Length: 364
Image 1 (cartoon, rainbow, N blue to C red):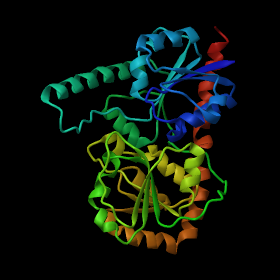
Image 2 (image 1 turned 180 degrees about the vertical axis):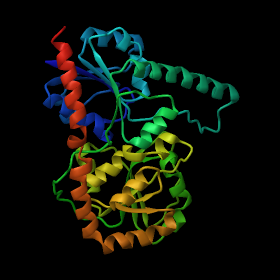
Image 3 (image 1 turned 120 degrees about the horizontal axis):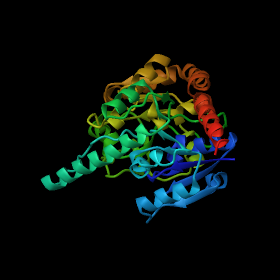
Image 4 (image 1 turned 180 degrees about the horizontal axis):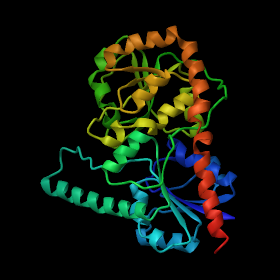
């Protein structure tokens, strides 16, 4: 039986990462047991699907590398630079293992803290280039990399990461045909990270939302946002399981997708890496979004909702969707299964990596 090590050192909860959770299922279905390296505990259904979880809290990078060598897996998959800074030398010493970079976050240099002195900024920049070099080394030793779309591939290359074998796989979910028995909730739902990186411009334009009811729900990012208390805006800080999260947002008719920070390529050039976008699509929910490259074009081209320039257009956008609600819902459901369903768009990739690993496994 094949063994796959999934490196997940970013620390993000698995319920917010469809690529990671669904990957476990796809690998298991193809006959590979999965070992997770994660800085924390894994609970719930996912724990029962993996062979083992290695809690990396307190472990040195060298110790993690030695543990991977000891396991001697057929496949190692990294997702972010936190993984590659540990695994970068392994492709050059573990010749019988196939390494992949299923890139979920483009590693950019982005510092916005106002309190950093010049020395701290220089130290941060040195650290960035040191870690970037390790990311580049890891990719050079990989069999292939994965990115979400052509835009993200272009931005990834801007930050010195490219590979002759590059797969384009949206950060999507399985289609969800389940009808959730939840009371209907009025207004728009914004879900996900509540931080200035994604919501700063929404906060600045909050006065333009007076006539629209909106719920902002999710987890606090690295820094908090300050939002005026308004009767039509409700904020809920919560950390839900994937099932609870899906059930919660399914109560709403329309989703709001918002990305603010134009100077942060990873967030602004979000393209088809927006997990929250695909979660709403998988439920057949139309979206209203501000302009973010790649994502906006996808919404407009396939009529998945409405793209607005600013919040002064929000009320009109809501009315337009409600006036044509059945069209949007039916169109999204039809397109999702055909164009975005994770099982369908990832099938060839998983078939290939398992076939390659199986062929190499026979020669061990």
